[in-house]
Image 1: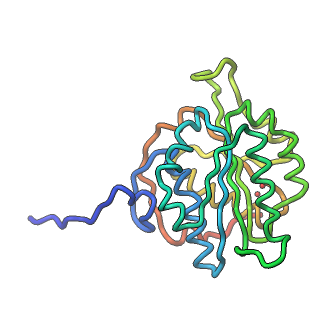
Image 2 (image 1 turned 45 degrees about the vertical axis):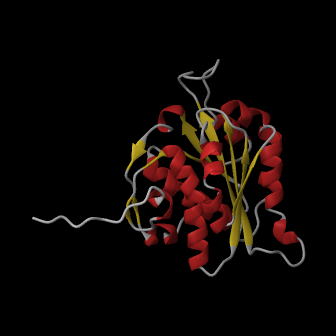
Image 3 (image 1 turned 60 degrees about the horizontal axis):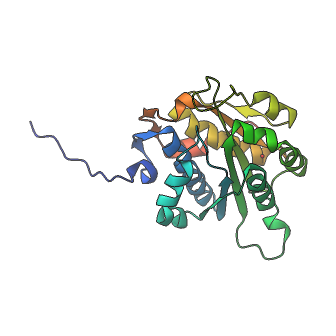
Length: 229
């Protein structure tokens, strides 16, 4: 019996749009803005994404992967800027939602992704609240990725960001596996556009090294979501 050889490349986890892909939780976060960009392109929208935050476990390595995939980011109009600290990173994302308030904008909308560890969520509360009341651009949208460490694997204190995010009036999406990072991430962007509020995805430490084989389909990005920063 002859088995057909499949074409395979190491960047299939980012570029393949249908079928099964194999990737980790952090790699799924790298892929997320690419999926959103492809979905917007199919809708006839030209959008860009700004990613800014502060490095640290359990989101450690996210910035490194983004820096290693410069060409891929450029193809999908994704800009990554490593923040000096968490609140300055959130301020940059806050500003991205004002891009279309100026004449002759380059893009139909700019999406934003903030990331930081749980202590960063605590110190960024003022920015979160102001951004929540400001809202997002019509074709923009924001996700705040909070890296929790409830078991103190790499922290001095256990952490859980739900209460701090609730205090900032931010709805929380809690992915339980790699597939849900992709699905709920797109859902979060859709919610953010559907309502003037902000959205966040809270992640816990054990998810970061997890690897899985999510199934991707063009329909996933088109799924109609309920009315999230």
